[in-house]
Length: 428
Ligand code: ACO
Image 1: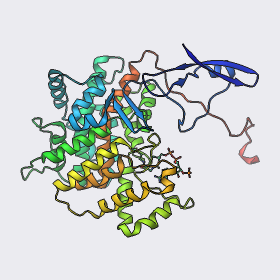
Image 2 (image 1 turned 90 degrees about the horizontal axis):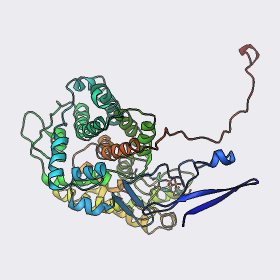
Image 3 (image 1 turned 180 degrees about the horizontal axis):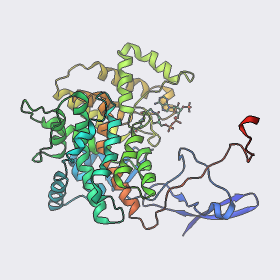
Image 4 (image 1 turned 60 degrees about the horizontal axis):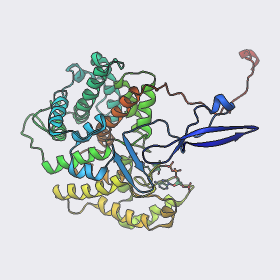
């Protein structure tokens, strides 16, 4: 039976079709509401609004479930590797062995960036925030790879996708090297994706660098955990930018800009800063009191999520990865980890957090983990961008390939001045 919803506005009653997905909540299709009633819907922050149809990622925030193309995140993170996840997100299926070898080969063959991009970096101050550099350099890719900016050509779309997945780690590592004043390290294509990235970050020309396989595996898992997350703020930004027909490099640069904010990808940086500020376990009660004090505006960073009203499934895996990395790096007593674990214990048993269904999100433990791997705090969001690029590009491609896609153009509830006449400056 086809479902519908009835709306009554003034003396008009209209039926709206209700659409069901494969799983998850139904949606009321309100596309014709304005033409039939003259009214818009109002939902700033998209609290009840599905902005698109997608077959890539599914989240059940109440149950704490995250699926990429139907596969639970824990199975992918524990059993697969990042490039396999990239293939899955981009093409819809896990690759066969032959497809995987081909996909890995193609990504690997695109890891170098145009040599002139190295000079592009020199326009930035060395102390620029790495995310500022990333926004600039990824946007600049459109100026270097003209042969993959025609979005109407499926081949060019695929080349742009592979280039972005392959070159983002190279640009991220160059950003880091530029920041610390060391020479750029070229990719070495006999290494896997994540080991290659670690080497580009940490190798120096004067000595041999051996990638620690435990750390590479942990970072690869972190990349899987961050690869996609449904219609979050940065992904929606990529879709909106792309809906005008902008090229994929410009769209991903827009996504990186959005990811930078502390309520989104900047949260792991903010969470680590918060743990440092708390300092010791004794200071936790005073900090929790500040968080609960509404006049103070302090938030427990790395806690809470717009969608998850249960434990973020990525947080469980991240906590496990955190312990593995600290053990591998020989860090026995990290005061930040002690603070994090005690903070989590207290918050999960505190009425304020229980009532509001606030649980640790993926960022709660990722800062400690990335710090233990040797990354400076300012690089944390860059690492998130490296991982999320595949999700952004898969969502962008899905949108472009949907024959019914339109430019995204929200409307508004206007509360400004009604029409008034211009007064000459001498009369104001
Ligand atoms: N600490 C304390 N209180 C919080 C927190 C928090 N981290 N998050 C939400 N609350 C409270 C709010 O004060 C509000 O309380 P009230 O009802 O008494 O006013 C209630 O919980 C609901 O909060 P909203 O801000 O309305 O929830 P929203 O869904 O808009 O926010 C967000 C989600 C932005 C993630 C928020 O929880 C937050 O700021 N968390 C900290 C930042 C963070 O960790 N972001 C990472 C997100 S995950 C990611 O991007 C990978």
